[in-house]
Image (cartoon, rainbow, N blue to C red; front, top):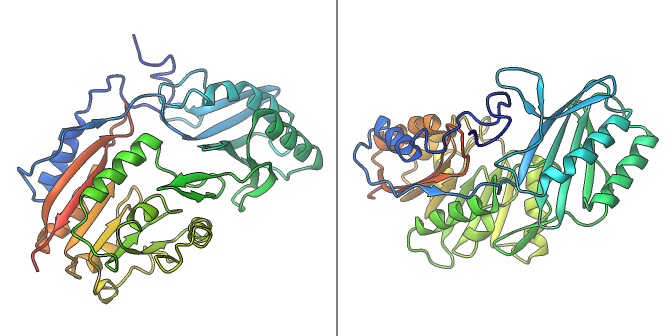
Length: 357
């Protein structure tokens, strides 16, 4: 029996057997391709199902019929979601009233997307529609938020920035005890449990630090790891997304961490930090996009920073970037695979690299 009634139709899961592929082997093989054959890799950390806290659903309208779910495998059609082995249980009861809401919206003509981040105080909903928002739409969205305890509902037309339609309460989640208001539909680690395992492996990989030591964090998002790092040393965080930078910087100021954490907007694909920018850093932590760290890697490997902690959900990108680190003289000190994406062919990895100075 399949783990989900939608398997084979919905494109959300690539495999029906959670044990395949062998995700410990995915990380081991990625490091071997980078030239690190035979390094010790920690046992796979397997996270529980029904813990995913974010989803980006597609919606289509065909007359009065609304389909809301993930795209079908290798198709633009939508598999109308009735169950999911990955999402937190709170998501599914929200889907039927969401379909009713979408059917009533004039800003939704044919296609839309609905991103939901389940925060500490409820579902933060961002709808990306294909027509202008109307006043009746606003009224319906406000009523929906009140009825279903959504702290914020935002709408974006086409590729425009999302506009909050209603904020009933400050939409918030906590990173290392610091309250952060993420941007609508903003990137989060897939689950609280996964975030905790990544953070623990990252902190365990840090070198011995003093209170005034300096950590450079690349691709820092809205502060997922920044505030845990700030408990160990001063943090210089860089992120290209303006809304995420604003969220992190606001949290820094409101938590009294100004001077301990600095957040800078910088597109590291177009303007990577240069080798001299890493001078004096005790450690670098990076969690790049799926495609890897791109042009940033060559400047990082040439800087000779004593400790680099690389977090990746893509073994292929990790293998490429780790190969450059090996050629620069780095060794693998620790490697932890985390199964944050069950039934997929990806594995979250935290790899600690060190170099003798």
